[in-house]
Each structure stands twice: as structure tokens, then as C-alpha cells.
Length: 294
Image 1 (tube, rainbow, N blue to C red):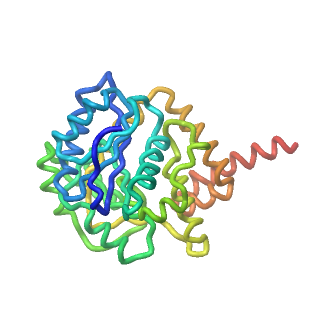
Image 2: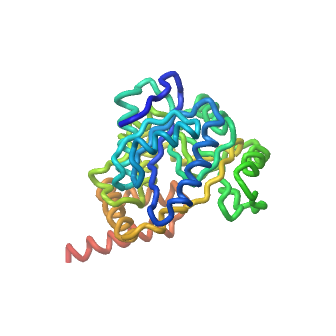
Image 3: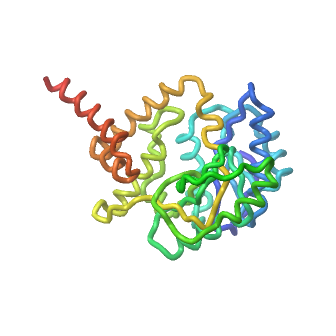
């Protein structure tokens, strides 16, 4: 483990960092844009889990050049998203328990200065356990509004554009990045890596069900997006290139059902307002159980 974290900060970012050997230059460029933009704001401390393929010492040198205060966990082995995030969460809970807010960020993001300020104001004045900004994808789609804009040519263009998209209001929805109230995140335990054994898939859903139960299903809680803050997120810049991704999705699907059961899938149908997807999954497992009982 390397690097020092500013212990006076209220917000600490977490980043599972995967640099693919076959596309190293692309991944390094994404990572540099991400972290240089993150360094434009005062809250620039980040716990990085090194998933490959640079040595921790080399990665520490790069992050110092890019201006963030980074602490690096891991040894360059890709243990998966949930496992890496959970290691970051547990490091914060153990070593930096005074931290108020914890974010989940990805390398394919660009952050305008003070992007988190409206999000923290919202969390401080509400009972919400988490909040997301709006995002603009590589295709120029503003999510969750589904509005189309012209995509800038470079990082400087994004840094200029993103603050101009700010507008009043909060809407239902969920995207990454997301900022968690650290107390709430710790209360639900983060990711249950005993069950989420695949490298990716359904990890976000496990947190959303956890928060719904934490708040109480009577409240009919749903995640929200604050439209005052906008971040660039290419989305799926690395995930779909991973070998065995379908096997990983399947393993985590089984883990999600083991954790929350068919009722958890029904809750996700409501939380996401996507009944076809999650009620279809519930029916699949109900049919499977009927087959076992026959």
C-alpha cells in the first residue's frame, strides 16, 4: 500500500483501476484525464485499487504528477469491481472513519471543478443515503434526461461545457459517479463479496436493494440524480472488453438472488422502474424453484 491521504477532507473517492495491456495507451489517457480533472477540486483524495497492469510504485508516481492525493491498494491483479470497491470502502472505514462522504468513480469520467458541491449540499439537507450527478455519455446523451448535445473534442471542451448544463431540480434515476453518505454505506455493509463472486455485474443493484431496506420499504425509496451537477462518463469503456464477462454477470446474478431473493428482484423492478427486466428475472427463478419442487 502506498501514498498518503489528506485526512482533513470530507469526501474520499474510490477507483478500481484496470489498465489493459492490449490498450494501455488508451487506458492511460482516460486515467490521466479523469484524475487531472478530479484534481481541479479541493476534495481530490482517492483510494485506488490497482487491478493491473502497472506496479504500485509506477502508478503512485503517475498519480502524483496528475495532482491527486492517492493511496493505492492491491497488487495489479484484477479481482473484480465489487471486491476492489469493498477493499476501498473497508480501508476508509478502518483508517479514515471520520470521512463523511464516499464516492465511486470510473476512469472513463471527466469532472468539472467543484462537481460534487451541489451533491454534498443535497445530502447535507436531506435524508438521502446517496446521490448521483447527471452524466453526458460519449454519444452526447444527457442521462437521465435523454437530451442530445454536441460532444466536445477534448477534455478542455468538456470542462468548459459541463458547468453550463446545470439546472435546478432532482429526478429519480441512478448513474455513476455516485456519492454515498458514509454512515449509510457502512450500515448496509457495502458489497457482500461472499456472494458477488463475479468480476462485474449487478453490484450496483445489490447496494440499491440494501438502501431500500435500510430506509424501509414503506418509504418506497428510489435513487435520485441532482441536475445541478454534470459529469462526463463514456460508460462501458472497459467492461464489455473483459473476457468471460457473461459468466461474471451470471455469477453475480446468482449472488444477488442469494442475497435478497425473489423479493429483492421485485424491489429492483420498482426502484429502477424497469418491471420487464427484474420481474422477468424473478419469474426465471420462480420457474426454476417450481422445477425443483416438481
